[in-house]
Amino acid sequence: MKRKEINSSRIPVYRDTGFELSDAETASGAFRQETENKREPDLYIYSRYRNPTVVAAEAEIMKLEGSAWALLTQSGMSAIDTALSIFQRGGITRPWLFFSEIYGGTISFAESILKKRRGLDIHSFVPVNESYDLAMFKSVISTLNPELVYIETISNPMLIVPDVAGIIKIARKDGSKIIVDNTFATPFLWKPLESGADIVIHSATKYFSGHGNITAGVLCGNDPGIMKDAIEYRKLVGHMLSADDAYRLHSQIQTIELRFRQQCRNASQVAEILSHAKQIRRVWYPGLKEHPSYADAKKLFGVKGFGGMVTFDFAGKTGSEKRKRRDNFIKAVSDKIRLIPTLGDPRTILLPVEAVWGLKYPEPGMIRLSAGFEDPEELLVTIKKALKKIT
Image (tube, rainbow, N blue to C red; front, side, top):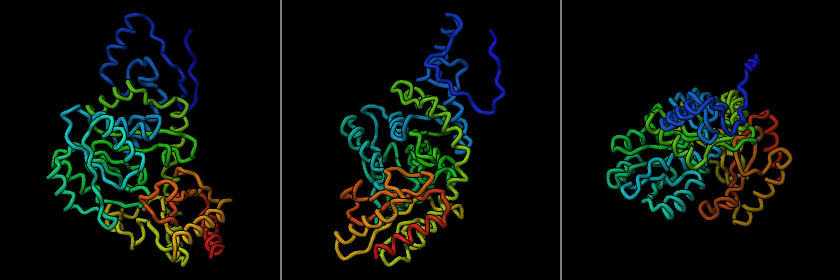
């Protein structure tokens, strides 16, 4: 019986585990074609390989990034695993260089999985005075000759913005592959592929979803060979996103520019207030002129914004005094600003840095704040009242 077409403007949710193939010859042809690792196959076989709802959501992300392909995975870490693993070449893999100021989960993955379990030669490039020096990077590249360079556009949690375009240019000249985690900047602020990055990664859990109710990751690129390797790896290790999450993500992606623009504005206003508050020792926000990365951030992002994240540290003569002010602030704002260990949510949330990063950032009064896209007046009043309360 012929299936009736439904006049809906939305993509359907294909929850099929396996897809119907009419006969043995069709099945044989579908499996032969599967070895070509196309982004969108002519015939779907099995949802771990490819799923039409997931493919539709990927197409929306391709529009955002301006990429030739995008592949969704079930988390940001699975996107990172996929992006990194496809460049492994056993014992002949040259050293890999990771910028030190990146997501803690990525650092742990590099140390525990890539280095200890897979035996890769992993190196770290450390900033000086909270900024990366291009001349120093060029020297390291020349000496190390890394096969791969991994960097974040805006670092977590210190919000360092390197001259990523300059770094990509140097690394490519030396023959290195470049992976850029663009989660904090999003395509709204900058598109790494346009500057020559090989892969751009997002934890789609954050700004792409933007509502704190989907866990997903995505990697994007232009090279068809890299895409085929990534499709094969994702298929074999089972990193595929579910159809239901892809359906919801497809809808939520439509509003990312509106949401993120407001989050940048809210973060900028919060940073401005905190930078003038006597209760605060220091504020890290790339949009503040005193931030070490301000010049590079302005060069990279122009007038679009500086992201939705703000990190700040409470003043105090002792660590216990700073910690007490931090805790009192968290308590004072708790009705409006919750302590939730993620970012990019609709409402502003926060995270005490010491509780997550420990000794890496020893200041006990530090808080990482993720600005939401709620009414800015409500947000600013909440923060001002809390600062007065803890004085």
